Length: 242
Image (cartoon, rainbow, N blue to C red; front, side, top):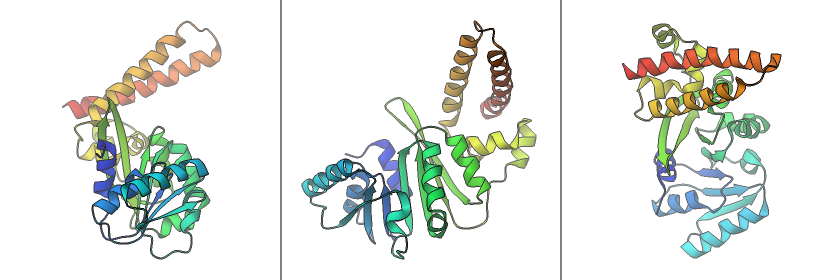
């Protein structure tokens, strides 16, 4: 049975292209791709042999082993030079880890039709890097699973498409904040976005409260930074609530 997160990622993968699942772990996505009748090559990769063996066992048990290639290697290096892979999925990594993976194979990343990215944290950092690198923002999704909201970002080839200037002006919020929060999510007022931002607001308020007891200059500066960030975030929350 597919999870909500797996199902959301699966829905974003075109059915007519070759796919590589980076950090495939137990090969849940490749198995789901086989079962839905994916056209094109399906590759699962990992930089560690242990998870790759777990993937192999799952593929054998599910009867999908003859349909999926498994490769040991780092990131997109496993598909460099291959013309039969058009989409890559990087799910379950931190946003900064995803940036590191893409930076190490940037020409290969730019050559792909789609990159489907699901950061576990630091989504803001990842989006700002993608925008700076002028990847085309195609779509974004949020999905709730086991009480947690996950972000999914889809980028590919084409014009940059990160324009949020009008929204930033309407909210009185910095452009960089909206880029980091997710232009597609904000523009379509995704139904889970308000919950996600309210959760972040509570986390920031907790950190601020913990810093109140500390009198160092560093703590004072951090409180000031958080106060500014909270004020900006509140403007977005108010706009979404309107």
